[in-house]
Image 1 (cartoon, rainbow, N blue to C red):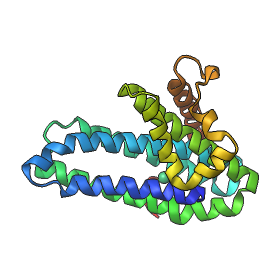
Image 2 (cartoon, helix red, strand yellow; image 1 turned 120 degrees about the vertical axis):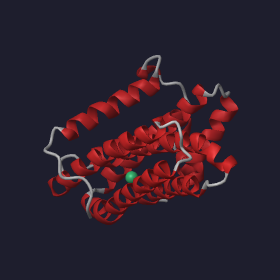
Image 3 (cartoon, protein in one colour; image 1 turned 90 degrees about the vertical axis):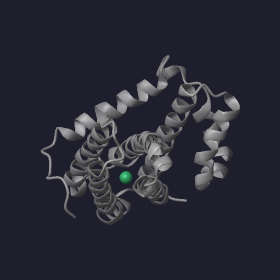
Image 4 (spheres, rainbow, N blue to C red; image 1 turned 180 degrees about the vertical axis):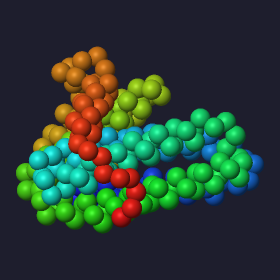
Length: 223
Ligand SMILES: [Fe+2]
């Protein structure tokens, strides 16, 4: 299992939620749109933050992809903002809402296509083995922190926490992670992050994103 597979799996899962929302046309299913849009927002946030902390930060200093990474970071913001606007519209069963959501899925598809076909191949060629391992470490750390946060929010106990960690394990990383004691360290309490580790990791992501955005923004969209 490689970082590229993990990131592409995220893209596939997120795309599938989008398609489920679009296919929800009967009354009962339309009611599910509210829940599914919220699920989509959670998945997108977890993916973007893990991708930025893992891959984008590893690429800092690689001049060849600097503009592309800046542009893709801006697209992350644009996508999150548009989904936020769609989520705030109360009636999600109208033709207008569905049409606007469909446009959103095109934006998302285009963004994933740029990452998979423009960024990932270049990044794979540019990163050393150590840099790639570090990127994977940071990606897993961020994803695990998101899982921990969801469990805290939904009040689930330690057993469920390990079930959450199994999501990462299912990605094929568990054997290597367990051998090195890595998974244990990830799910163990982390006093160095203070009382709110999720906030600490988010703050780190926010600062990193700000730093990347200090570059001139390339235009959004287009491949
Ligand atoms: Fe991505």
